[in-house]
Image (cartoon, rainbow, N blue to C red):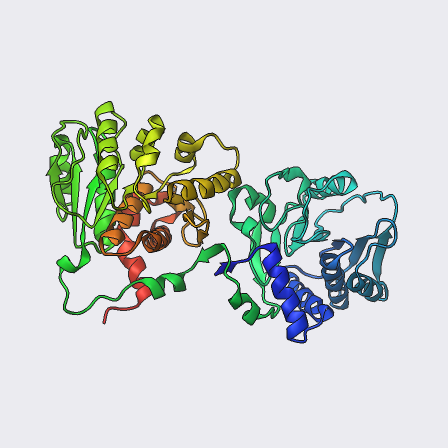
Length: 507
């Protein structure tokens, strides 16, 4: 799914009005009907409603909702902010007049000073103050109003986007000055801001309202941001020929494990095998031999010359994919071995976990990472590599810069795991659940990445497949074990089920 910026959505909106004969008032009616239908499906007419509308078309949407709810028997108190008396858009003025003519509706048009009312209990607030086109943070009276709404312990439905939040980036975000919505009903398309963790408590639950904006206009735009969905994976996964052998599905080498951390190597091996790799070799210190051979008998074991830690990384054979990191530790000899591998490699690598921690200890190694390699940090690992950040938005913006500078792909893990490409594009993952916050989950992902890279998928495609299927496997594991009971082994064991769920039954 494409994720459009505010300016791109305005282009689509304008095209719909100018080229497809849909008036602005018709679009407002469609938005209002969608919002009204959602509200009436959730809350009874006994729930009192307060509407806060701004002077633009977001306010017009809210006033139109008020008109429809009043017709269905809801008790409405509406506040329209027309500071100075001449700020309303033509559409907002039209719906002000319509709402004013509804019986039993209390409409207050605020032109000068405004005394914020006491909010009654069990209140439903409809937020139509400012839409996604807001450029500057709220301040003054509007900031105070928003803070009072947030303190009211009310149910809040925001139309299009919570007031005070930009649909794109929010580098100067002060959360207390943004509406904290219970439900956000976005018009036609999701906004970039929905996929950034900093905004989760502001956006709340979000749903899309299909109002018939031009699909032709949307198709012509090539955006920077995307949401990866099941259909994308279905069309990308290759079906396997009937006459095929393991030799057709590549070989992967994974440098993983150290004394006391061999479980990470086991998880990575299982991830690669369940992703369909033809052959996977785990190279770990000598202490890992009985563990790998017992826990993952399907994997090959290559003994590193170190007893407890990996002390060299010199592939003995040609491999289709090489992954480094799960459980290798940050021993000085391991760090030097990684540095030697980076300097000698000319094809993309997968770098995770302790490989990233080693690089953080010697950042000059970043310059040696082969182009189109994949790094898979979580937030703390990212900060060790690229400096402390207080927000996920800050990390994303830094990741764009870093991916372009080093020409690598960054898989920034979390809810809506983000795949940042060297061309500046970001792909947000739609699968996964909180059950995946469990030790070893990232090691499984490393194995899946290695498995798909070994099968010949390019880095850009392997990341999309691996991250989505990893998330879907987590969802399937949670169905069986619940959000608290999922382990990394459960995720690995469900990768095959995840692929089957997408590709359909076996022929």
